[in-house]
Image (cartoon, rainbow, N blue to C red; front, top):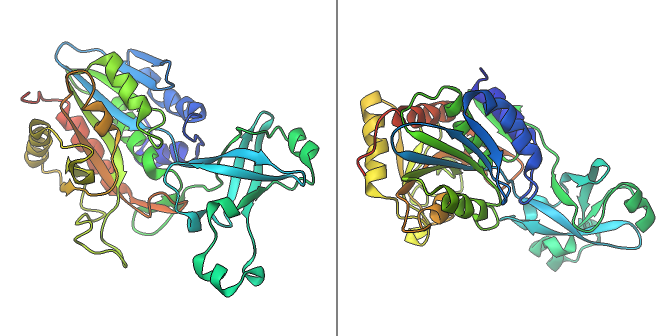
Length: 347
């Protein structure tokens, strides 16, 4: 059985931009197939694992896609223009090393732009926009790019691997949401429940929670828990009123996100998780967010409505190549999810 850190390294170091999650699913499938009754990929590209039970059905969701890029133009000198998939902040992309996933295998590249030495004072103040950046793969013309197996539509991800920080904290890319994938995989590895569990490793969350919506419609579970990450307010340049969450203090149970425009969690689901955490003495935090949403925002609106909430892990610097997580938060989140599945929610 594999520990949380080992799983996170495998999952986060894998590459899978929205719509191209297959490589990530292969890694996940290898870790869970011996612990469930069925593993399949549906028509939307979600990886669906089923553990049959005799009580109610619970859907667990964790999106597998990471924010990334896609080639949309190649000029005559061999430079590639791109569009962004997911919520990129332009300054984060500048001067990054990337991997292009072409038809002949991975190709390394760098994101370039006008150097500051050639910028006017006004341009330096504004910074580069994504449309002013390009990818350099070392080619000199269109034919050389084609020989590398790169074409319009080639997906692109950041070239970064997990690394250790101090005090059981690690940094890497795609913790949003390979951390959630670890929660689901680890829970399945040690599952003890009488419920039917649908663990869905969803596709295309970063571009509209598409896989969550279609899989929830097909499965029609009695209730759902999405697992994702959220940003804490425990570092400089962010105010506590913008996030009261702290790394190392346990998972966050979502009460509401996006100021109610996304998910207003079912109170019974929140009470279920809180009662389990209190009884098992698992530290947790409550979150009322005003920013982003998760798969649960799509799931809870499917068919006649599916009671839903979210277990989120605090992660610093999300939507960047240097996200930071405390492994203890992952472990506490796994414990909360596993213990909750041992009891029945009062729905």
